Image (cartoon, rainbow, N blue to C red; front, top):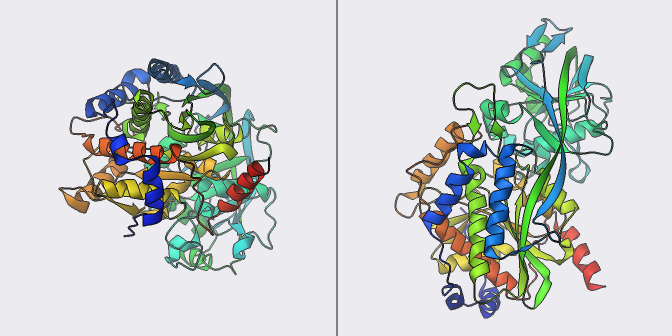
Length: 551
């Protein structure tokens, strides 16, 4: 467990900009009832699961716009609170079968039971016709690490079979990638994109619960139905024709049919010397796609700074969830109460506290609620590429994706702790609450790459991603571990993610106070937090700031 507290020098600078007394005398006080009301509304059946391009989005936008207007916050996009985000929705039809031929045994793998496949191409139909299979280990091409699983093999027009996560997780060797902590090379988004760069026609990732960080049920709920993607100039033609997941059971049958030992090859793939293995079999599938172009929206409000309005700090949370699945009998609404009605409610509460504060912030504060996070961080990616305020003038940001619903904690978990100097600022504020910072307890799950702050970080903007703490003040760590495990097993990305009577938001209120204090100590000073030396995003930030200073 890593715990850090900001050094005395930085704490003194921060306190000079915004004293503890100043943050305790604000007229608006966070309350559990106000936060609960937001969550109950946004996660109600009436909002239908808040999927982009649905009536649930319309209700959500009205709710957010109305709240920002009532607070007196200014629209961030000219005279509008909305930023258009052009998306394409592609839904696999026909319950396609994956047919394996050419090995010891032919197999027909059933949709959803054995595999989930789709395309990101804007094509009315998708086809793999006897595409040769190649096992490419982890499917990583990382020249800076001396690693290329595609070296010496031409996969053009072929279908690659890929292991999930990266070699560091499998070995727990800190010298291999980042050890237990997932790198971006372990994310499914990277693997499909790299397969496309290599010319593959198909890309299939073998699902395993531990390295994927979620069970097959999450694959089934998240990658079936309409899949939203960014609108591409080439209509997605540069991507693989078919992408998907296969179960471990299906993978075992594939390797057995090829006369290959999956366990032995997975072990071999842990070495940079691994060479891709042709499987001497083919895979085929054919399905149609329902394609719709949808305009979804980010929602953004701003409180202009009193002295330096061009410099901006961003609070962000995604408003979307998975919508409604008409193929499910009974409860088929993915309400998304924790994920992320809580974060959206917290964003509104922070906005209200800032708007009501008698001392207006020196710098501007933006409240950004983004769309299509569940479909691959699409709303935040669009904002990062088309910012409403220059990223070079964006001092930093704080992302909320799921607030505490189980009670106050003695610590504050930070996903990506140690990445940036923002840790010092939130650490100082946490210290005043009698709390400490704790590193992400599950770095192997790659949470830093799975929420919206990542898209701004890629452009250099320092971001902090706090989560619920890990040690309940009265019930201890075991209690929090049990609550978290139950949620992930029973409710994550399922219709059962609904607000319950036993949810308590006193812990979330303490966290919101922390987030407010952290923000004030940035916007009421002239500090420019940066990424730590050695961080992958620091070069982009340094270049960004140097260019801005030279103007």
